[in-house]
Length: 247
Ligand SMILES: NC(=O)c1ccc[n+]([C@@H]2O[C@H](COP(=O)([O-])OP(=O)(O)OC[C@H]3O[C@@H](n4cnc5c(N)ncnc54)[C@H](O)[C@@H]3O)[C@@H](O)[C@H]2O)c1
Image 1: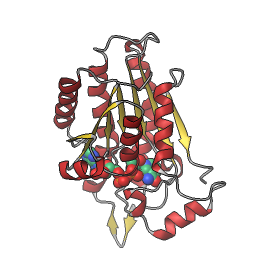
Image 2 (image 1 turned 180 degrees about the vertical axis):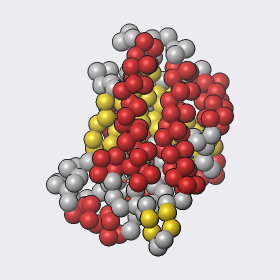
Image 3 (image 1 turned 45 degrees about the vertical axis):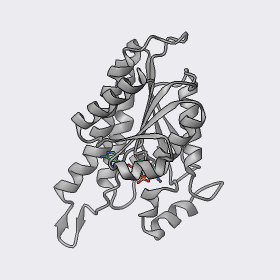
């Protein structure tokens, strides 16, 4: 699907990978709307790109946000799920178990939030006239290398990201009849608000185990892959690693 003049939403748009994706899609000619929790953070970060306060964990908020985009631009063609939280905590620490509330929040944002956006984005995309290629829309999710090789304290995070990978194929199967592709991306360690909050020892350890280049990924490298997935109609129902040989 060509990006020029297409309508795209990106969640987690006020920071990191989501912000870089908004900028890349807008530079490629798409009409972009960023979703994140706080309107003021969005307005400052997006520098002129449209933004709407949406909590992806709240189904009604997602529905309102997507309705507003369709009302303003007449359609939705691309949805990129970047909203996510880390919620680090050991399963058992100092006699305390992993708090249920934290577990539920991480799953609510990373997993249910992703599914909320997928469901309502697919509904809007199903109304599009198909392109010559037959495509009506493209949905891209952000999983993580932690789905398979999580760090200490990442039980909830890794579970949520493994679930994103797990649901990619069945959702792609569900949406194929509508001409909608579904692809997930699994990044290694990237520069962002999330990685900045990790203990330096953990991030240095991960970077030290990389092949080449031995550094964190940059947002624009993730965004370039998002752009490629949108533009390449033969990518569907899979998860692509962008991890630089992370072990
Ligand atoms: N940075 C990395 O190393 C890395 C690695 C693998 C996967 N990821 C994934 O990439 C995605 C982007 O993360 P990032 O690294 O840019 O982190 P980030 O913290 O810089 O950005 C995440 C954004 O999501 C927003 N957000 C959180 N909860 C939300 C909610 N309920 N509704 C809407 N927005 C919400 C936050 O406000 C924030 O702006 C996440 O899904 C993350 O799990 C990141």
